[in-house]
Structure formats: structure tokens, C-alpha cells
Image: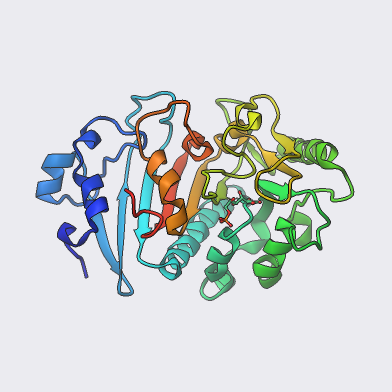
Length: 322
Ligand SMILES: O=C(O)[C@H](O)[C@@H](O)[C@H](O)[C@H](O)COP(=O)(O)O
């Protein structure tokens, strides 16, 4: 069941029809999907509207305009869902499809998790059909950031992922790469980076031909209401870190204060990034990320520009200012 554009919310319709989209936007929106004549003429792109189990899903695939070198690299896309439930169904399929691609290509699939609400949105992967169809033996699991606490602590992203996801799938324990929780923040970051370098040398983790950095197959990132991704927070010097693969923070504005985190060069070397964002409280930075401007108020999420594909998974509340 396809709905027509008139059914879009006003802000989203405004986004679809806004003249600024004729200029190459920060995340350019040009599609190769079936065209809506009006939209096609007005916006040089079309959209695909699919009804998904009673909810409206708007998805448009994009090709980077290659015009703004600073931010445009691979493909860009956004999907807006009426509910987190619908989002979780789509995210599971997206993840399983990418995993299948890489498992077949290289017999390994490297996936990076975030903490926070992302893990809940992955729940459908641990259910049929995926629990039975995914080649879990090829999966290698990492964290984009981790709190420097014991792995059994309630603040641990490892514990969050284990309780909510890893304990429900037949993952090989040796393919789950958590931090050494006996080390302090700086040591844990260095140790995790050393682990990644060994896995690059052994061929488990691919390498970006452009940068020589680790090129993870899929990074599943959340975003905080301040626009943080991983443990890279607005105004913090770490967002500018260019040399390290993994660094540490001891003054995180989001508790707990001590964390390790991937840096943007590693995040942006990814083959695929899914940015999973739900809730009206995050609509501001989502709106900022879809703007052209990159000025001093840039929030971390605006710096996510992978070599490969970036797809936003948004519920309608998070997309409400678009
Ligand atoms: O360790 C962390 O805190 C997370 O990795 C962090 O990057 C999180 O993904 C965002 O802050 C969004 O968190 P919520 O989804 O819970 O809002």
C-alpha cells in the first residue's frame, strides 16, 4: 500500500519540497527510485513510499553529489518510521543483509555496536528468521565506545549488549572483542587499538585503501540528544583526534565519565554506517545533520561521513524537525 506525498507530515513534506534540496545538501537527496512527477520536477529526486505493517516508511536512496568534498563520500539514505517497532524490523533486515553480503564475500563480518538504546533496536535480529538464517560464525563484534567499568557493571556497554543481544545469538565468544576492563582508561584505549591492529594484520578487519585505517563492514551508531556519537561529545577536543584509532575520555558529559571511544577517522573509514535515532529529544541534532552548513556549532553527528554508505534509521519523532 503506497501513500502519497500529501500524507507526509508538514516538516517532512517541507524537507522533500524545500528549494535548498536543489543545491547539493549536506546529505544530498537524489534517488533512483520511481519518481513522483511533481517531486521529481521540484526536487530532482523521487521517493519510495512503502506501507510497512500499517506504518508509513519513507525511504530514499541517494548518491553523494561528490560536490562537497568535506562531507560527501559514499551513498546517503534516510528511512523514517512511524514507530520504533517498525524501525527495529527494518534495522534487523538491513543488518542481516549486509552481514550476508560480507560473510559470502570474505567469510567474516565485522560489526561495531554502540551502547544506549541501539541494542534494544537490534532485538529482531535475535528472532526468526534471522536467528536461523544468519551465518553467526562469521560475525566479529566490536564496540564504538565503552565505559571504563567492569564488564559486569550496569554501566557496561558489553553487559548491555550481552544481556540484550549477544546472549541470544550463537556468536563465537572468541569473536567478541570487549575492552580489558582491568586497565585504566588510557591503557584500555591503547590495548583496544593494539587488538584492532592485530586483527587488521590477520585480515579479520579490512583496511581502507584510501586511509590505511581499519574499515569495519558495519557500524551501528546511536546519537545522543546533544548530537554525540560513540563517546565523541560536542566541543570536546577528542572530536578533532586524527591520529589515534581509539582514544579515551575522563570527563564525559554523559555518565559515567571514563570511556574509550573510536575516533572519527576510524568511524568514517566504515563501509556502512547505520545511524539509529529515536525520540523527539533528538530532533534538533538530526535537523542539524541534514543542513548544508558546517560552522562552529557543528555537532559530532554532523561529522559522520563514511567512505561507504550512511543510512539514517529515524522514528517520526526524531525526524519531526526535518
Ligand atoms: O556509551 C554510550 O553512551 C553510547 O555508545 C552512546 O554513543 C550512545 O549511543 C548515544 O549517546 C545515544 O544513547 P541513547 O541511544 O541511549 O540515547
